[in-house]
Length: 273
Image: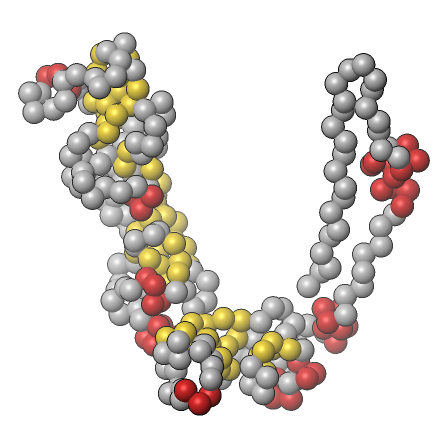
């Protein structure tokens, strides 16, 4: 979306009628999506696309941004919205219309929407425009207990665990972390592992009797074996030498001139999980 040009500001006595500097882009004092383009002292009023606001980080840059990236508390006014299907304004991120739908939101560009679903256990936060923990989003009807359908058991000081973990009764790969023993957050083990209630950690299914068959039909025994005991990657010495230079030696700086940058060492690739 592109910014639009309004009538010159000098035509309205209530608007800014002079440039603070001969050249640059300057925010309006009251309206967050309005700004001024100054060229050789001539001022032109402009508006960001509906849903965007002006980013005044530098007068050298003309940039409209998403509202949650900009502090508009001192210039809260905005242009009238131009709503479209699922889009409160033409551009931006917007919560689902149904209050009890916590993990879905809309990304709108020029009035066209795309619905996005947050990862499991997270909800959309209108304040940050991101998916986050329910207790951080603080969205009505989307508390941790309401979203996760799980409440943390009472923990005594004698247990000595600040953030206890509990198995997800419906999914062996997942578990709940009770922050300060009170607020549940859903977390999970990496692919191929399950949560062990006995050790309160992630482990391989063969070591957790109640979840030993969790990946049956999802992963073969061979795939599980390869995840648990990945084969180290073997590098081809000849190919490595070819990348670094003839016979594996590093190129040396030329005498009497500017030295060439030496190639960096190849970083070891992590083993596949």
